[in-house]
Amino acid sequence: MKIRELHAWPRMSTSEAKQLQLRLRELLVWDGGPASCALVAGGDGTYRVGQPTGRASAVIWSTEELTVVERSFAERELTMPYIPGLFSFREAPVLLEAFRGLRHTPDVVLLDGHGLAHPRRFGLACHVGLFLDLPTIGCAKSLLVGKHGDLASDEGATAPIVHEGEVVGAAVRTRRGCRPVYVSQGYRISLARAIEIVLLCARGRRLPEPARLAHLALQGERTWSRPPAC
Image (cartoon, rainbow, N blue to C red):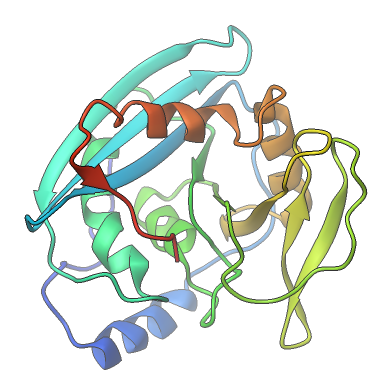
């Protein structure tokens, strides 16, 4: 896959990283989305305990055949520690290397992290989406910012996530009686379309299949761990 070169990944201060997030946020588009989703990509990253190295997987999954079309892996030195709200500076570089190794171009990308539902409205899904220049969705297992109201127990139930008076995502029940996932726009997609795609890919599980498969692809190494996605 082709990756845009928006900026390098040097070590930078917390203040510098936050300022870069604010500048890049001006490039984001939060509407539209693919009319069809034959190929959906998922990405995930882990970190080797005690070593400054990150590893990532990217998976392309067919919504028609319900099979994995392609996988790619990457390993890279980390340039940033884990800092809540700046997670993309740690994970995005190695994730992008994994996506670079894919031959197919997906219709949409699903990431285990946040997009708009972020203190500066620039989570991992936004940062990666800009580099890929593809519709990108954040689908996280826990809230980073905001609150939502009661959610019905039925599969497909949703409730808006509101932060500082703004709807920044939605809690989505992908499986009846299961805890929701937290969906937010990353890039070039509306919230409504993002929810539709997450539910399309859920396949009776809590996590959408492309993101779940990307996570499972990294489970061979027991010495890898992952912090909360921000």
